[in-house]
Length: 318
Image (tube, rainbow, N blue to C red):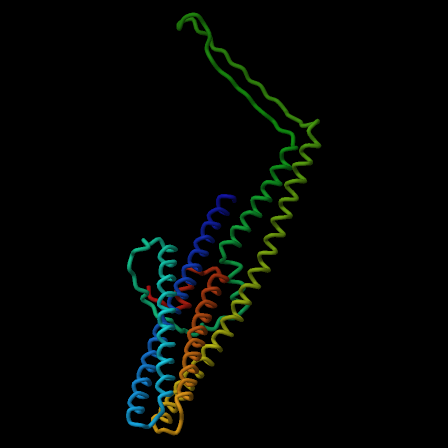
């Protein structure tokens, strides 16, 4: 039972490794998405700056509008530099975690995916977790080992029967050897060891009760983790939908602000506000996607199907 518990504990460590690497990968992909969004916003800011310069030369706007556009362009450039540095550090951390040389160049092939989780009844998910999680299997084997240890402690106080037999030859020369043998049996009754054996039984019983309590506590924790993961996935899914709508609206707001500025009926302040709204909406959308994928990875861990479920839940490439 202890050997099987060790094997399940090893599998549980593998599950932890998969969850950790998935989380680090998702963090890096999230930052890469933020780089793309920041570069897009920087390109928009530069285009608006060039338009402001052209309009100033035509006498349509004041010089302060050019300065505002230039400040916004530089702000977006700072965001790009920051996210590029964060992405480089996260790739270093990921390479170190998966065992790649730190100087090894590699590319993250999967973008920030979004796949709605297939419907699964909560009760079925809890049963799946209780039956499939490696840490729960290890705890169950530890309980069996504790039960066997207590049975061994009880059996140590039982009387025992022994049997010995011996056969050989004796003599000064090979041709004068005589056969010899002995046979004996004995009964061992531990009359004066009762206190020590009772102590062993009590100690083994206490260890057994502790293992039972730990298994019951683990069952409760597993159910809690599954229910919490379901709540996180549902909440994150709603966040993605709301963030997507907000990003679309912010994009429309920026387009209208640009048109109003080009028509000369609005200042560049309105455009800057629209750009900030787009940046915020993009960041919220990326954060919601990261939270959704992370919640699904945590759910796979809670269900005890990390190696098979993470790829299926996240929809990554093999």
